[in-house]
Image (cartoon, rainbow, N blue to C red):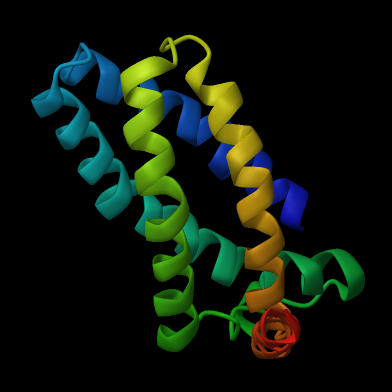
Length: 145
């Protein structure tokens, strides 16, 4: 389920989106970088995060037991969406700012996919209900030092 959503949304759809952004706001000037970064963060991130939150649980149910899609979408909640949006902001705004500045447009989908793979670990934790335990464990490790 995760690979289906990741390949379609973080892969194919994102590559098309990045090309459209570059065509609309070409170049590496500050104004163009800011527009591309913010548009990507506000519009595409919301669509992709929603696809993960609804799609992964739904596809997991469908792949494992053939349940109708209406029974598998309860994974999308406002608190989970807010959590993923915060993660998205922390990871992708800095990454996109650097990528739109230094990474050639033809290579960007590949580098974005690599960053997305890391993000997918966190998405899995949220969609499978392990996020709070993960954060508590990380906080505990931080206090050990």
